[in-house]
Image (cartoon, rainbow, N blue to C red):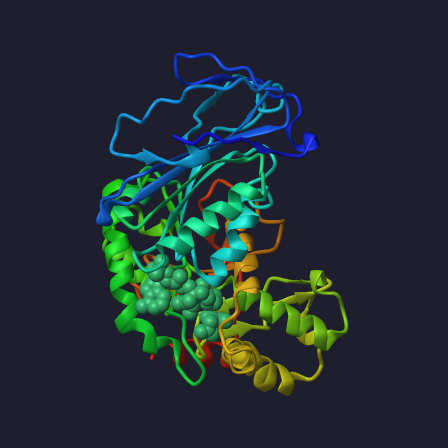
Length: 405
Ligand SMILES: NC(=O)C1=CN([C@@H]2O[C@H](COP(=O)(O)OP(=O)(O)OC[C@H]3O[C@@H](n4cnc5c(N)ncnc54)[C@H](OP(=O)(O)O)[C@@H]3O)[C@@H](O)[C@H]2O)C=CC1
Ligand SMILES: O=C([O-])CC(=O)C(=O)O
């Protein structure tokens, strides 16, 4: 069995003390990184687990062959355990986050944000559970290797697999990205035949093995319908826990309003995307604010708001595909980060965020049993409530009605 050590920058790995998980004791000098990589070879049941621990004072150690179905190889056969470290004492309990389509473009941006602590905070250790398929398995290994090489202190475990029933076990977050993207000239709805079944299967898997309070963000298109399919297949998980990502549209709308008003985009608030992540979506400028003022008081060109602004936001994804040849990835990853943070950080007083949520019992009379983007607020506990105090005019009502017909 091959054994190797990776050397990390001293600055990133100071004040660490560890103890070997097995009976043999270990003493390693500072600035060494150990990894555990376990592998199952059953094709439908393939999972690799990689733990990254910080260790001190190296002394060679005899690792034991794992007793379970997994097989380790190379450097990943080293198994260490952590003794309480000064630095980690104040850390929260580790959370399990699953990311599907983990070898895809969006994930390639997102995973490194998650691992860095940018999303869940500098005291929140995480385990990343990456879901792929047989065709992407090698690519998943490559992604896991890049995560290792990044030496993120908060990233305590990485596992990769192709079976959602394994990968989703006990997860607290499911970031469901894996799905075919559209190409130039296609509509997102045209992806439903292929992608819908992915979300039916993953809903069943979540229902069977995920934490009962898992929060699910569906990204794969058409994301509203996919979120609905997913939640319908997971009856034991509250429907309220499922979101379709419309935050990218909200961000796009904020950017366009800032551009038109000649302000920096942090001055734009209270932007709602109503409806679907599709070309029928309604970016709401009636309730939006710039520097705390209604947008219509700041941008006097109301024709631009009703026509150009709305269309730019609705079609932004398609235009980007025409130009780049593939769909937005980095800005989507950023918007997933924003969507998560909106649920774990209290919403600033008076503001709100958009998310595609289940329409059960909503106060706006939107048909029940849909996933529909609406204005939401959160106390930062992972849950949300629909904002009550938005206003409507004929234009907005007509546009929202059109989504529903
Ligand atoms: N809601 C939103 O705001 C946005 C949503 N999207 C959507 O997110 C999804 C992922 O986009 P992106 O990461 O760029 O896509 P990529 O093609 O880069 O990656 C998608 C991953 O999905 C998996 N997949 C599952 N089924 C298929 C299939 N039939 N064909 C191709 N890939 C498949 C693949 O992984 P594996 O083989 O491991 O299953 C692949 O790695 C797309 O549906 C896209 O339209 C994109 C931008 C914004
Ligand atoms: O347009 C697409 O297909 C990808 C996407 O959802 C977006 O960029 O909004």
